[in-house]
Length: 189
Image (cartoon, rainbow, N blue to C red; front, side, top):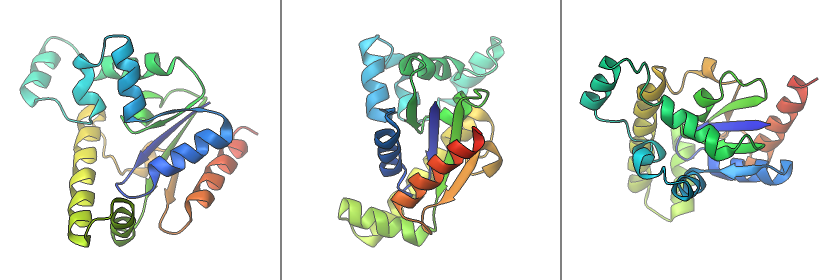
């Protein structure tokens, strides 16, 4: 079982991922864990931008495409699969929904919420002002959207890419986890 989580900044994605992994007995692969695993096998430096969700220089992308590489990020996508070793896992971010889009054992999720709700969550979590939280939400969402578009050619917030989309501003973290678990059980019947 693979569960991938794409999320807007402040939507509670990391908390939901941790709770899901704990509840279902799965490994949790967030940025930190993926970076650690890549360092162990000597593949971190060449994939640093991917792990940090940074779009590669467009000139480098153009050169790679001109040499016949349809998606230069394909190697990073394969690395995600290598790092997770095919283990049952929750993977947060890194376009993992696209990485596992053709895997029948994967459940792809997008978490979102009203901007004001996300700003409030960030203010409480990070103990920062509303202005700082608003700026963070805007910048992180723009970065994630740009990275996703670069890696997949698709709009990050397009719900058709995901099996399940949850508004975490309307339900608690625990309820979101429950919805995901129920969805996984329902689709396996």
